[in-house]
Length: 161
Image 1: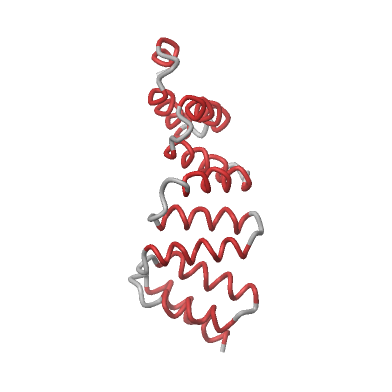
Image 2 (image 1 turned 180 degrees about the vertical axis):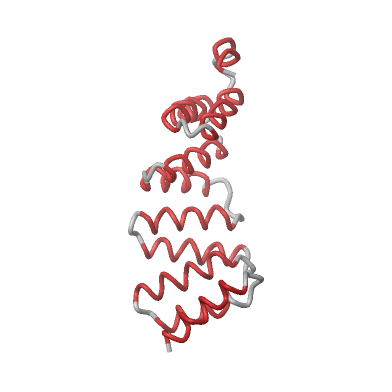
């Protein structure tokens, strides 16, 4: 792919494929460079923004991750995974209100998405909002999650009162 990019430097798809190989190899600096070059050629390539956001997330650059996930949300708004990942980045960046907002958007898109219910329970519990925490944890254990997970959440619910 490096040879193909050298021959066809204006081909964004080749650069993107190369970036994904770098990501698989955990060569994140190379992946960032390749994805930046993709976005220079194709600024509306939300797949490249997603991949770049995930690289930034993996490397702990929460602001970079948020920026790229928000860019994706300009093009794709009906996908609970994008809202969920954006929420995780906001949470990691200590922007809890925005994390809650994005988890709620994930649930609005897909009310059968258990991951955001659990995270909302945790976020509300951390804020001391036990009633909302209880509500989201109770919803979460109604999903098809492993019994051990349900038991752990039930213990949390007992502590919440």
